[in-house]
Length: 227
Ligand SMILES: [Zn+2]
Image (cartoon, rainbow, N blue to C red):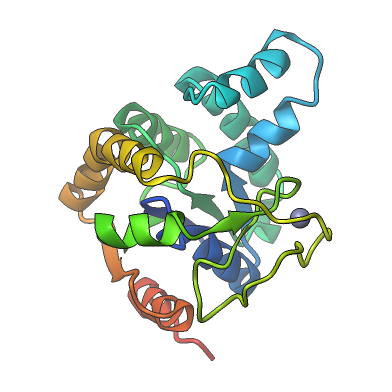
């Protein structure tokens, strides 16, 4: 029997540091990365209806609907399947975001013969901690990378270490904006978390620790030690 790829789904509130953990895991295990943000940025480079509507929807604070997201995911999964034995695994950063996406993803994994290959990690922080971190953070307007909210990891800085752009505070990173996102997380991602908890896939990690400790705990949970 062929080895199943290492599929990791990492979930967490805004400000939980799940993106940082996703990149660490991606590097360590040579995983393919699926993040809605990067896929949508790629997709909006086209000139068709959807390419034009994606940035408009995001700027209006809207959510990209599941069929659009799924079309992008399926194209990626097909590409990864074609890698054959070279495929080490896939990491889903912050998705699925709705219960119907979780169901569809489950069917997609069955289709590609990766049934039961997925492990789900929830990087858990309190609402208070999310608000504290998000209202403090600054981001690169060009790469979308987030800096300075995890004080043990990034020094206070004004320039993006990757592209040199001036880092700025996002207008939606207020207490009110954050509370709205936390409510959305509870309503939409909450059922996804419950679903994975019920089918025994969910692993929870305390996200209020240092980046290194969170990473160490994730490696233990998914069954790999950090060496
Ligand atoms: Zn940058």
